[in-house]
Structure formats: C-alpha cells, structure tokens
Length: 173
Image 1: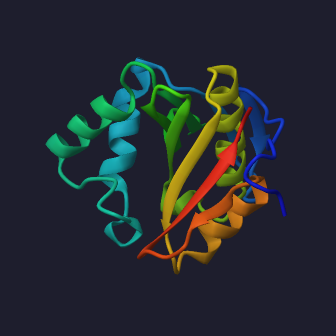
Image 2: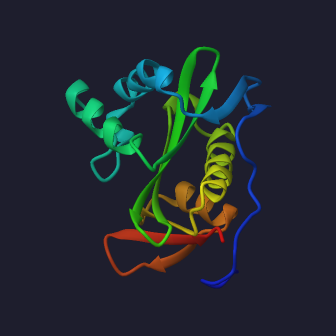
C-alpha cells in the first residue's frame, strides 16, 4: 500500500485502442467537442440505478449544463468509443490552483465489467499528468466495492472514510 506522498503511475496517455473482454474494439481518446452528441446520448441512456451522488443528471437540459461544466476550460476529458458510440467518459475537473482535480468516471451499463473502466481511468490519469495535475481525488459510495477495487488497483488510497461517501486520493507528481 502506498502512502499519501507516493506518486502513482506512470499511466498511458491517449489515444489507445484495445479489445475488451467481450471482443469489442474500444478506443480511449481525448474528448473532442464533436463528441458532444454521442456523449449526451450515452448519458441519456444511462440506467438510473447506476447514478450515484446525483450524477449523471437525468434530464436533457441538466445533462447539457453539467457537460458544459465538466468539459469546460481547464478540464481534462477522455472518452471510450466503440465505433461511433461513446460508451465511457472520464473527467478531471480542477478544484484549486495547486494542481488538484476531482475525478468522475462513467461506463455505460452494457459495457461494464469488460475492462473498459480500468483503461479509461488509467488513460485519464495519463492525460491528467501530462496536463500538469499533481493530485486527483474522488468520492465513491461506501458500498460500491467494484469501484473502490478499481480505484485501489490504479493507486488511489482512502483519505476520508468517516462520511457517507468514501473519499480517495492519488498523487500524479
């Protein structure tokens, strides 16, 4: 187990293409504004049961406003694409001038448990390191063991486990 000062990585930068556990060709690449319709469609199709902490939002207008925020200036975003469809998205949103960002990651239900989330997360962290982020944090529901295991696998460590949500951090530099 790493301590809070140990740097995780190195992580690959986008783009990268791989075959998932279902035999589908998946490309993880930097988000482009041209991806917006496909990304919106992914979030509109998102199963309400897989929403956590109020995200992703549910209505078209709320999704649009949320995407404006998480894909805006200073953010780092990568998408996982299967053909023309966006099936996963991960974002780093800066939250202080010291190089810290909050992470969020989503994979469409039909594409979960196929290795996409791991590669999406690793590639986002590589892009985040290249963009100069030093520390990344996230919060996850305490009972979401698959997500917690994924985050620990790439180097995240619990930083606050006293609340309803489990906060985890990772150092990139």
